[in-house]
Image (cartoon, rainbow, N blue to C red; front, top):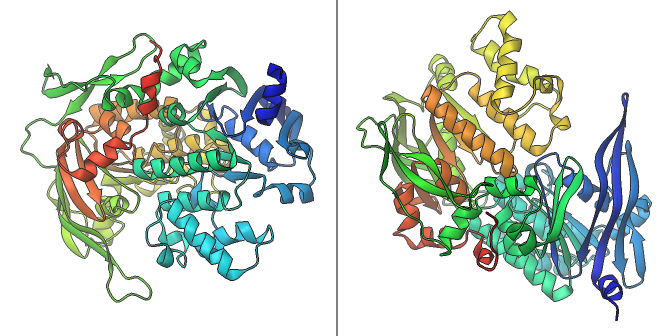
Length: 583
């Protein structure tokens, strides 16, 4: 059999000279130009690139969910046993038969992708019901099986719960369960693990790998996590500004990138940390002193050298405890149960001024609960939180208003934290007006400065939230939190939705602002490589309890608790041992 014939036999999805443009008053704007690549049966093709590069537009073309204003050229061919289907040319009824059964999508945003008035079990069952499964017993059995497969604890209880009762990571797992319910031939996974902690991430990716092998399912994996892509994908397609700048086998793209842009993506990723963590190189701590700050050399890949140290601050022996969290406990009543659910129990730690304390753990471990208590949005049933000696809980109106300026919260879901009816400029101006921070004539200048701080142009002030990518919306959320000049910022998965380039920019931004303005951060994250880059101290949480706390370097290099070791072991990047990462 010829090479071309073999390729045709294994090919599942063929994208050929795909172009997508959007009509507007100013004419056509090209979002994707001349994109070509192949997804083979039983293999994973990773589509990587920064936010706004056109990755999701390609995914939406494959799923047939582009807006009516889109003009599509080229082809997206799905190879079936009965022949090929031009996915971008199917009518609505044909698409309805194909979606879910032949091609399924795992969307990026779990907060807005589940029906809020349907139980999670009902949402998963609906994916099978539309394709003819009517037996209630079979539906329930399959839903319970899927919930267990994607790592949801206690499926018999969770099946009757609603999306608002699940954490962001748990909602993402529900979406994945619904997507794979009918064993599709092609799975389009648009950032399927961006909201997941490392252990849940590994569970989900192992599940996708198992399905891929069992039924020959091909996967188009859209991700900004190059460690995940390197671990799971057989081929890479690198996109920028709507075009493919590089493609090929994963080991070739990582080991010998041909474009400067790919080199920059590698430089901004956490691959260096993954390499050292998994034994390819040993993590070392140096005793470098810079003025009053101790520093350590963290491995970060750069275009100029394979491992170059990034200097980050470690906590000094300051006696001042700017943020004091003491013996926090939070409970929630669960419908149908006598005993309350304990979301956080006996949580204690302190953070010095101008330092960063990270809270890590699996989805549902209580990280966000602790963050919301610190930010003053939830009152604990026991314990206390103090900022520079002042209480942050149990406050009345005037004190609460003053505290709101001192403490800001950046949410995990950037779309849910922005008013969809309000232009970005008005959103950023709102805290300036509420706290009377400047004169009316100065607001526009302050908004422009806030946008520039997070790497966005001034004309974004005129845009609406739906006109921005997920990463751009998250940058707006961060800008809004910083504009009142707070003393403490609680960041709840604030960079999880960002591609590696923007993520690196935001992390550098947060560090610069911390140094310039003396900001203190509580950084909630499931990404341990990010925590290793930005945090001074860390608390590790499991099932609402703090199992370990201390210096980041000490805990990550020498974890004492089995759960911490489990989290570190689950960090992707083991397959990098077979790659010669580019220098």
